[in-house]
Length: 101
Image 1 (spheres, one colour):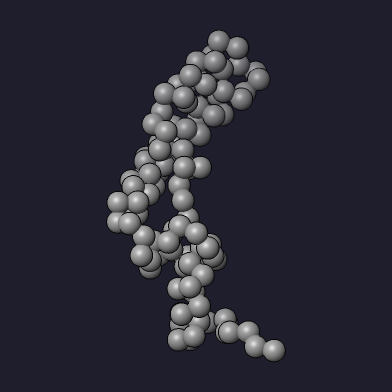
Image 2: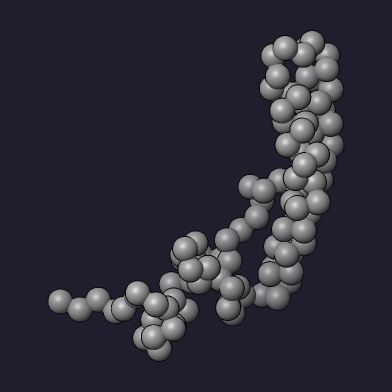
């Protein structure tokens, strides 16, 4: 089980990403638009830098839905490898079964 503080911090980041998504996208569009004058592009870039760091989607971490584990998470299922294995053995994941050869 992951530390509760880390899971909560990641939830806070997800909320900030959602809150600033439109503003961030608009500033990114304006900063890379070559038809705008250089001063306006630089102003957009500076405004983008002034946004909260945690509002960037790249600061989010994939975490297991059940345990909060940050590593070994299968994005298709949203579970860490060990929880996915347990769910598979119980038969909770349709179309997935333990390999044997």
